[in-house]
Length: 446
Image 1 (cartoon, rainbow, N blue to C red):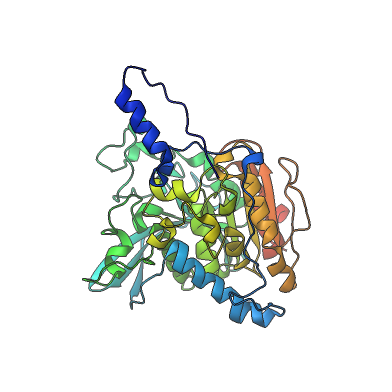
Image 2 (cartoon, one colour):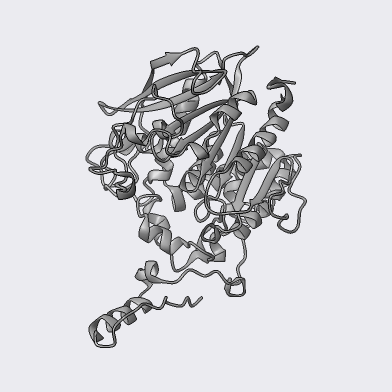
């Protein structure tokens, strides 16, 4: 597929610059200079790998064949070609409650707060990442929770002066006054619009979140920091299927679930895993790998998340690997110009979550994340849910804007841009209500 190069304001006198741009435009390694395709008529013809057919062409016809043969095969293909493989290294975990308040009112009425250090030790080293938890103060039993990574630090999700500020690496942002890759108390609550903590608690759910940079910093540091540094085998060359940052963040989410299994106030069997954008990619990968997550939710996850790679609409495999080379394994980088040769596409990742409930959310103005590609991937995963005796996605076309559809496989297209909004959360909590048997009107169990 030929992709046009964006027009650039280049002076006609600067011949060398024009020549350089001309060279870059035809060089396959320079996909980051290519203009994104937003024209459906330019989506190339493609054929998706079959959901219910093994790699050697055998039909998958029973639940046993799905769970014992095809599902593990799909996950192995994604480890080898996309997200990478977590090293098989023994590790230990320790959980430390570093702050606790049974009455977090204000700022969150009816809530209690916990801050837990998750300590991971391997190869003689230790990595610590901190989880912030809000739970309904009044509850008759273990509480179902939403678990989600955040982009800006735990203190950024809520105006709560007790929330500890991360000392991990953060991206420098001049408009927020972030310098030297460190955040500050002045940014407390800056992203609270994405986190309706009070409403979540009122609906009978807990909320747990970890700053993703505590687990692994989001820049290409040759995997010398974060959990890579303690789990990668010392002195060994990094393999082509070595795990990237998305796999590292996903691994950290499973360690949070390890903690939930030790906390009597939390129902570890009713955890809804939620992620937005690159953290939506992470949620899908974590949820597919760890069947302990009861519900998996992707919000605006796009390329490498819920959107079909073969559509080459918006962000592409070539561009994402060029701009974010640390997110995926090295093998994935080789598919930028030959995406149809990938033995998987993202519908298989969604299918690998079956039979557990999955929800995919898109935004109408977020063309970069390819909303149609997200819907089509969810739809293409339906055969796995049908085989498992679960409701598949019956809709053949994308639903109207701001309308949630589906039972076991949920979807909505929200009006607006790349973001997480109260409407999104309303849909996610409604979806969880159905599967966790929560009475929203009563703020608790049915």
